[in-house]
Image (cartoon, rainbow over all chains, first blue to last red; front, top):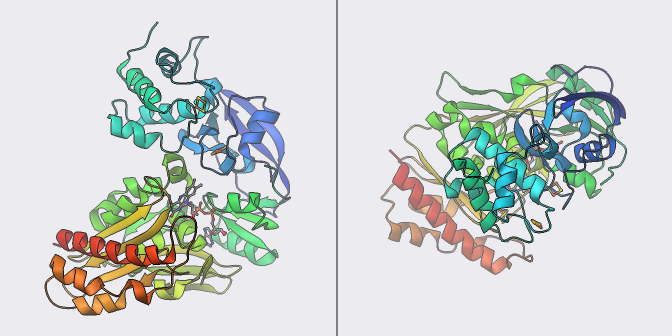
Length: 167
Length: 281
Ligand SMILES: Cc1cc2nc3c(=O)[nH]c(=O)nc-3n(C[C@H](O)[C@H](O)[C@H](O)COP(=O)(O)OP(=O)(O)OC[C@H]3O[C@@H](n4cnc5c(N)ncnc54)[C@H](O)[C@@H]3O)c2cc1C
Ligand code: FES
Ligand code: FES
């Protein structure tokens, strides 16, 4: 979708986005970060703010199918895009296989990093359905977990890739 | 974090982008935002106007020119460079290095143009583009001009692309029989570099550039001259690197002392040169 104009800069603008299948049209301040737009205006609080510096990945969402850190993007930059957040993973009230695998493998303790981990893992499997362990590690480089020590997270992603999740 | 108030424009044409940058005081280009957003959060940069380059499709192109050189649009993302067949068939080193930057989320947004325009001395691309002797095309109100990498990198966070101007294209000369390599000691795997070095070897004198030791990538000219014409045996390359560190004046910080950076500069220049020599056709 063409969202550009050659007109004058403005301090707010009407943003059209599709988030988890639902369309939204909102006037947004140009200074508002995408993560705050998602959390505070669309009430999608699954996306977390950890570091607010682009390092921890807790704020990871998919923008037109690509994993990005939503604290490193203005909401106005997302105008015209399709976004998926962690709330968009489950289908018909059933956990996504990755979510189930995280539960099966005790891949979370406090859960703060989990939404971002899931979105990065989902991005990996969308593009590489049969990753090696090294590829899983590389894919999760931008996500920091302070509790689990990563081993269980990597096992969970590997299990989800193989379809080895409990019903 | 709440940023300071800012106005935003997303022009559809390069002409409009240049006009907007010229019309507004304290206007800044916004590329991948992977450095600028943080600078705005920390209030080290608070532009009044952001001119988002996202819609300028022409700046995303990666082409192989008729003379065999590689033309990278300033808005080509690291992810795009990693996957580009034009890159892998000419200068695969660009993809190899792009793949080492930060993480997949940053690679999906960050651009090669933003990387060099930001010119953080720890960034990956400035030394690599110095070793590859890239040329930069800058577009401004008075049209287009091309400068060599040595003129482009001016100092820490400073380049020849001045206010009101845009970097539009980076041209990397045809590879010929050249082999290239990049060596670094980063803070954690694929993290920020403490020191890095890039080398390009194609028969004649190797071209070697060191990053993280000064405001601009430093060509290791003494070492290059010592190695001109002749074999690149490990002994000879090591010998040529001796004293390289002492000629540098790198910073000290929490990650490394200046002395250690001088040491790493020699070690990494050797590693990059030997690897590049091994890759030269
Ligand atoms: C967690 C994290 C880790 C990182 N680690 C590394 C690393 O190890 N190595 C590394 O190299 N980088 C690293 N980066 C920085 C990253 O590579 C940035 O993408 C890059 O420095 C800036 O590119 P950008 O496209 O995001 O530009 P922006 O952030 O959008 O812009 C940066 C600056 O360049 C200017 N600019 C951008 N494009 C143009 C243009 N075409 N013409 C004129 N001016 C322009 C902008 O006005 C701004 O001043 C990291 C970033 C993060 C968030
Ligand atoms: S909150 Fe965005 S990367 Fe940490
Ligand atoms: S589970 Fe606590 S930060 Fe990852």
